Image (cartoon, rainbow over all chains, first blue to last red; front, side, top):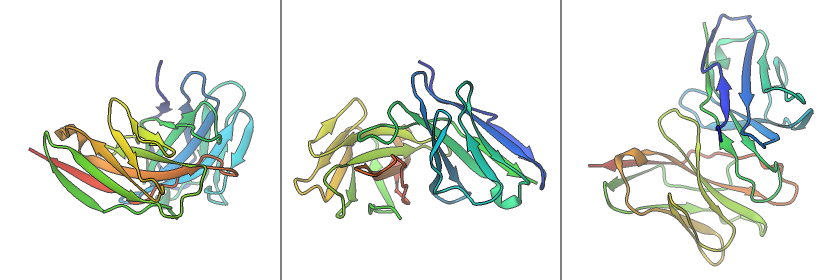
Length: 116
Length: 112
């Protein structure tokens, strides 16, 4: 059973460009979480999605950031007009049951975004 | 804010047991205690979780006090590859969407 896959693993963008980060959950998992880790800081929750639904976006910046998890295909975290402060590691995690009690999240290897 | 308190760092000799403490005095009745670790800059790795009973798997043991206000993660025979940041997280419970709130964790350094 393949683990959570993220691509690209490394992404370089210039200020003002768009960044698209992809996350393919583990087989059988229909719940995806995105987290961000800024340099020298801890992991911060961003958004929780089920197929075709955003369940909890309380950690998402109000502007420039969006996420989706379509019926078919990977979950996408999209950052428009990137700024240097967006440089970070972005991790996604998947789980089989979502917010239910005792549901374990499994993390991908992350995407390292560097904004020049 | 994280609902747990952990020491910022600990050392352990290779081959010895590593005991990592965690305080979660405000835990509610249906919240679970989860442990994850992050080796260097890799994605966090799930270790173990529990509600009230002690748990053991191939990686570690989790000891939860009877009042559930604290717990200890035990790595029985630490190796150099266990050097990582260990996170104790309280999650689950009614109304919770399952998001994990990471604190600063404990940096465990296993020494030869």
